[in-house]
Length: 482
Image (tube, rainbow, N blue to C red; front, side, top):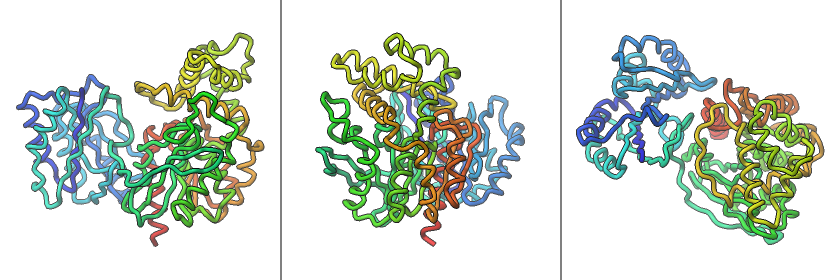
C-alpha cells in the first residue's frame, strides 16, 4: 500500500514540509518510493510569466552544488508553450524545494490551485499503513505557517503506478442523471464546476471508452460549467453494449450527434465549448459542422477524423512497429483472415454466442489498441471485462462502417467551422492519430491554431499534453470573459 500526500502552497511551504516529513520519519513511516517507480518530486508552476519559467529552466544546472550529493535530478523539462517546469528528485524534497527557491523567488509564483491542474506543491510518498500515515501527517499539518492557508490532499494508490503529467484530484460532480434519447437508449451525464460558468462539453474517446473523471482536470471549475456524458452503449448509459442482444444499429455517428443536441437542450445550454480527444475529436468535428452556431470554441487533442485510411493504419499499418503485439493480435482471429479484415473478424468474434469466445476477443482487441497509445506506457491497471467487451464491440462496429462518414468528409466540410476559435493539440509521436491528420485539418479550418507537443504520443498523460490542453482552455475562458 502506498500513499501520496500533496502539500499545496501559496508561498514558502518549507516549515510544513519539514514538520510532516520529520513526523513521518519519527513514526517509522517509510518515505522512500524509489523502488515503486514514482520518485519524490517537486513541481513548480509559474503562471503567466514565461520569463520566470525560462529563468528557472536555465538555472537548473546550478542546483547541483546547492544540494547534497545524494540528490539526483532527473526528468527536468520545461513543457512547450506553457510556463511549467517539472522537476523530479530522488532524495529530500525539502532540500530541492529550497534550492529551487534560490533560483526563483517563490513570491513570483502566482497561486493557481485547482484540483487536478498544475499547482505549486510538494508531494511526499509513504509506504505502509495509509491510515496511520494520514493521521501522522494531519496531526502535524500547520496551515498557519504562511500568510495564505495551506491545503493538504491525500490520495492512495493500490497498486502504485507511475504518474506523469498531472496530479490527482478532480472537480467534484454536483449533478447527474439519465437522459432518454431514442430507440430505448438512455445516456448518463454528469456536471461539475461552477453552475454559472462557461458551459463546456467533454467528448470521450473510443468510441465506447466512457467518460473519465480525469478529463475534468483540464478545466478550471471556477470558470467552467463542466459537462460530460457516456455515449451510447458504454459507461452508465443503457442498454450496455456488453449485453446480449443489444441493438447496435441505433448506435451510429448520426445518433451520437443528435444525442449531443438533446443533451444541450435538456441542460438549457445555448452554446458551449467542446473538448474532445481521439474519437472524441471525430465526434466533436461532426457535431460542430452540423451545428456550428452551438459551438463557442473547440479544443481537440489526438486529432482523428476516422477516415478509412486512418482505420487501416490503426489495424494494419502499425504492425511493423509492434511485431510481437501484432503477432498476438493476428493469432486471435481465424486462420486465413486477410490483414485488411481484422476489424470485421474481431467484430464477428465479439458477438459470438459463446461468452468465452467474445471475452477472449475483447481482451485481444483491447491489448492491441493499448500497445500504441503512449510513448511511455506504464503498468496497466486491472480492466473491467464488461467495459472491455462493450468498448471493443463499439469500436469494431463503428470502424467497420468507417463511422458512416464519407472518406474525408470532415476535412472537406471544415470550412463550416470558420469563426469558431479552435486549438488542435497533437503529440508529434502520436501513433494512433498521426500528425498528418491534424496538419490537414489545420489547413482546412480557417483560423485554427495547431500546437505540436514534442516527444508526446496519443495519450493525454504523455508529458506536455495535459498542460497544453489546460492552457488552451484557460485562454479560451479568458477570451470569452473579456
